[in-house]
Length: 175
Image (cartoon, rainbow, N blue to C red; front, top):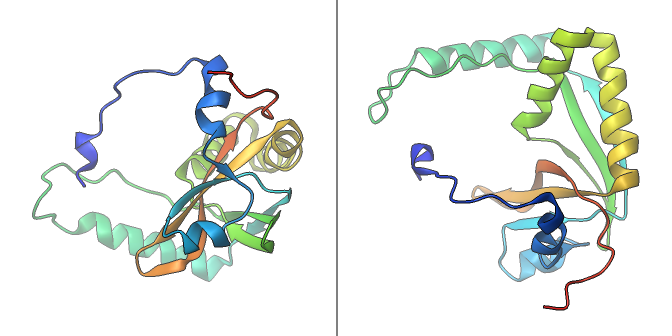
């Protein structure tokens, strides 16, 4: 898939999001996998947000790896690769599903972008406190979904690809 081919074809009003997504929400992942699906919008039955500092050697190795990738020429894409600075923290959820307790690291680039954006505004300590409050308290309390996906090499391993803030579904549409 060519990422440059993705187009925005419309918008969804905030009031329409709940009903649009509600039919896709699941509370377990095993049945999704048995059905051959590799993407799910999971409503965890409980979730604990965790922030872990990456060990310094791991962080440096990750930065070096991305630096080398950036220097490689791409045969099919002539655009320069945007520099990437890895995040010094892992953002994780320990969560409960119909299938039992699970834990996963957020693979969502928006989580790292939030960290760097807030860090510029607030400093690192205040950013980590704010992220713990928003993603660990406010989102689970108000309603959230985990956008879960699998990787072709590891089809039985579910990854947290995104965190979606969505109000609890209060009433299904009659239409």
